[in-house]
Image (tube, rainbow, N blue to C red):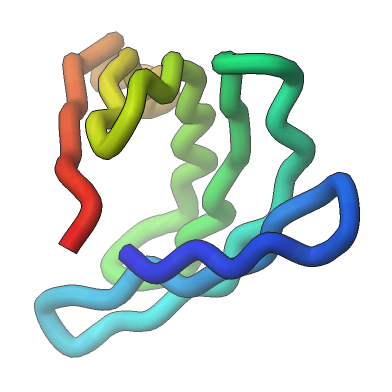
Amino acid sequence: MAITPDGGRFTGTISGQGMSNSIEGTPIDSQIAWAIHLTTPMKLTMEFSGTISGDTMKGDVKAGMMGRFKFSGNRA
């Protein structure tokens, strides 16, 4: 995942397993949220929400009918 500040918003790309999806969102203080609309291997909207603290980001993702999952990441 690569995020680039763009004024008061952010844009970026999430890549992996032969796929690449663009993202965009608006951070509010330490909160961040974005959605990814997948079409391959199936149609699925993944809604991410979380917090940023220093170089760490964590939260959860709602993956349609598959439920909710935790995610975390560190600045590379």
